[in-house]
Length: 228
Length: 308
Image (cartoon, each protein chain N blue to C red):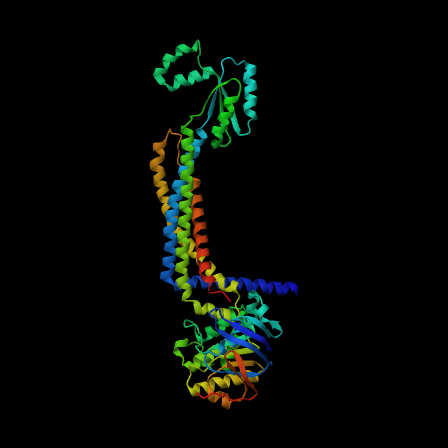
């Protein structure tokens, strides 16, 4: 599903965040991306949803070369990808329901489909009883569940998460992980950048370690491999 | 089948449009003070531009009527026979810049002179027996600024004894009119640009607070056009909102000014532009300008948030 061939990314300020990356991620996989801060994890992830373009090399997403993808086609790419962030990125003036429905409204989904899909998705993340609340009235874990619901409501083939548990306490982090497990079980590919050693070492999946913009380790059912 | 899917697409579009309208109004209400500030920026500019424009157009009108009043008087040599006059007339008509030509016989000239002098004119009645004046061709050029060159050409023609057009005065008048037109144009353009930047900056502040909203829209795959629409409409409303006061102000004050000034100009060849249609034209222009600067300002400020 995702194929990177000899990908380099050099930012205008001279920082090289990707230094010859080759990787292949298959549909339905669950991949942890680990490594020290500033090693290039975020760039690696951002290039997948065309937030960043590679300086050289090729990135294929389901056969489409993202380096040559026209700006006008980027919205189509994004509709097949859900993205979750450490800071949730919810709209504070909208309710839980509206935050999730927002993702469907702005891609001009039919209104009759929106309600059912939003409610089904909120059911999946166990927030059906809080649809009318505002994000500020929720705990951090609940806010992240809303954010996950928003990322998957359009049934994307790929969910990308950049440190989704970074702001959460350990118990809540496990809850969030259960949801990602559930999403993955349904066939969605999950790529997650994380610093959470316990999670990586407990829920075993493929681990890609990045240092200095290079993949230094790529193991099926790997360990976190760094001391925290 | 294809008819049905077409229907679905149009239905979707009108729904989307309704959403954009709703969103643009919501945002105006939500950013109350910013709305006020932006609309005020438009208002102030349009008042300045509007007042200036009204004055400019009236001056221009006066200038045009003065220009149109400029004519070349060709005095025909007394020795010329009727045939010679006819030839001279044809030669004048052949000059391409010439718009109209009228013949005034010397008897009429004398009458005019006697009439224009009132009682003193009586003295000239003596000349009716032996008229010392010349027959005259009054020539007007299609474009008043060609007066000088045409006059020179006329000077060369046979039997044209004297050619008069107010030498010296006309040149000064034309250069004065030209300079004031250009200065006015530059000032209006300058004002418009100032307004655009004011509005663009004001709207930029409202957009910064909506950065996250735009960010999320992009993230979940909304198209740039979709994101831009509400801002486009918002700018449009701001512009229209901002043009209401200037239009009311200019319409009212022009009506007063017209009632005050017009009677005093009675009998002069200088005249103000009529309230109708002039004020309606100015109003349409102000709405249009308000809408354009509003839209331009808001699209300029949303642009940098849309970079992929």
